[in-house]
Image (cartoon, rainbow, N blue to C red):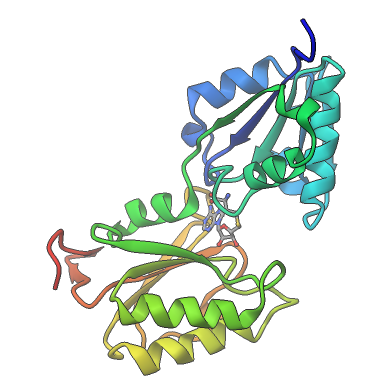
Length: 248
Ligand code: SAH
């Protein structure tokens, strides 16, 4: 058959950390892999075994990693890419499709994306139901977009009273941005708005802290934290935080 390729590539998400949150579909994909590719800490979650080559690489190398996986697939191996959480949320799936642009040969491969439990959903479940009404997710890393775009989106989402989940809120190389986001939120929302800092969700280090916007400080977040801002109706009940199903 002209142009047909039989190689396969599977793009997976390992969930937030707890092995129980890896889906059976992802477990099966990993079991048949010849090669597992991903960012160093994610590949470290895979138990080595004979017959499978682990390719751990640094972050910021997404496109190179995607091309390496596609080349392995084209050679007839069975590569599996691992992301944390869900592979389509600020992760590898988009990088693979970007690598397919202008490569009709790679577009013929059997490529599948297997969903995973993304950090904001595991965090929301641990806190109660803060994402129970309309919400959006914003990546606060300015590695791949200007910070002005982040500020504009946060302002727009606050103006429309969306609850928000913030990924990559604060890192050693980007210590300032999250403070600026908090300042925008304090100017746009009332300061009694609830904000939940969910760190290392589903791991032994898990810590969930809910405060008001007035009490929130940048130091409450790091790279293992997903931050969930409630909407105007988000409230506490007992030890839980939830957003009612109806608009405020
Ligand atoms: N694809 C991943 C997100 C990758 S971006 C997903 O769907 O979850 C990395 C960011 O995800 C981190 O900076 C943090 O904001 C969030 N994150 C990932 N795992 C987390 C966990 N177990 N607990 C809290 N936040 C987490």
